[in-house]
Length: 102
Image (cartoon, rainbow, N blue to C red):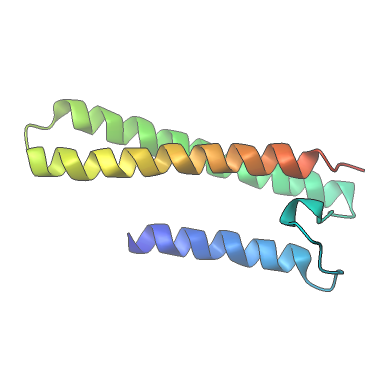
């Protein structure tokens, strides 16, 4: 859980960095990244993160199938559900942030 919290902290830090020194938008989605190159870099980084989430999910689901330990299976199922949520959230961020492309 600590690693997940660190990951969330890093994501929120990047959001704050993107919003820094810009007029505060009413909605996060209204924040524009002014430079197209920055947008592409952000998209690539988010896609890398999404791939990591997919890899983690695949590994966790494989272990769920193989383990006989019910407690471990329960824990891994919770992690798998979290990874699925992360994947959906990253997809949403990519889709929404690029709907404001210059």
